[in-house]
Image 1 (cartoon, rainbow, N blue to C red):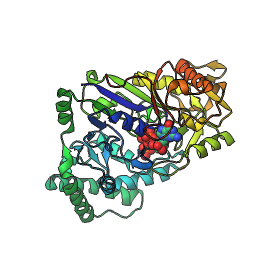
Image 2 (cartoon, protein in one colour):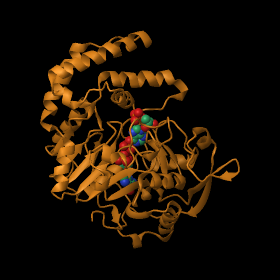
Image 3 (cartoon, helix red, strand yellow):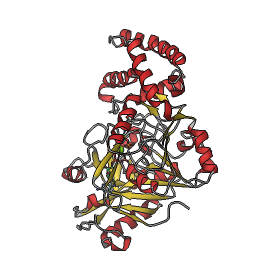
Image 4 (tube, rainbow, N blue to C red):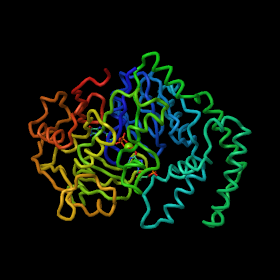
Length: 428
Ligand code: GDP
Ligand code: IMO
Ligand code: MG
């Protein structure tokens, strides 16, 4: 029962969707274990772009069982839209199963996401505005509504009523906003319930049956280590745990079930939203990377901040996630750059830091120590073996391996499935 976890090592958008899709060919089950429709995972197959927000990136393989786990927060309207869009493209979604323990994103969560961001002003996180944080807040406060309640009209009515009583007071008395109407939300969500009912099960039990039957399992993280609520650049993080440890809690399997952790690494760094970013490029090189790489958010369309690869971030991600090997993506985006830099350490007040700083003040003040390398100035998008990569490109990869202390298992040189160089067998 091999189980592999795929996680993001930086600030998201590393190409997790592409890597999960690549590995899903050999997997029987793909599980999304946290986050919600703040995620945007793009998978390209035969020139057609599929933008996935809630559906696991195994959905494009017919016969693959795709599970949305218990710690994913679900906006039912978005999920149904995504399922319908897939069906319209002729993609079968009958293999989808949704955890009855997953929490629902409600209209008031989206409202509070916007209101709280506005209230924070210059300190705003720059969220995706999808209601993710407020939904996880309710989950932690034990007032959230789970799918199991949505499917039981009586339970749902009582829980919605109790929530609205409280939320409406805050909406009107704190924010001076209009109160929300019970009937219209109730009716809309009951309609969603009937559409989702066939897919909702106890996914942990299902997953265990699959593992006992010897099936190959892929656990797909959304967001990334530096956006992790516990380990990321708090408070400029998301409200869940994208790191590998959460794959167990978010899907209902024990830690001893996991065989391998693959860390997806973009060949440079990007970040959407606010927060410190030591290797950020605020010059024309940053603009070149953004334009060459079309670095605009899949979910919100916002321009992504771009910077050099940061080995301090990657060493930290290795430690937090116990990464076995890296899947290095978007190497082709660097094709035209004459010189490349890798940040190998952080200097602060004249000293090289040994640990990744918890303090945002310190992280904002660090001076990255860069190693410069010549680029390869060659189109690598058609290269299919490691040996055929230009020498300078292999040097860049060797430097990453050395400075991050992780081997490279996959190199990606384009968005398409075949633009992938496999350096080691992933499933045992
Ligand atoms: P995710 O959120 O980690 O799944 O990443 P996104 O889908 O948000 O962003 C990654 C983007 O890069 C997507 O548009 C992918 O299709 C694309 N992509 C993935 N790997 C490669 C690659 O090696 N080269 C290029 N040029 N694009 C890639
Ligand atoms: P994928 O899975 C990049 C960022 C937002 C914001 C912060 C909090 O595609 O890699 P939230 O809406 O989660 O409360 O926003 O997290 N963020 C992402 N950045 N990729 C993502 O997902 C992200 N999901 C959230 O920009 O800074
Ligand atoms: Mg993304």
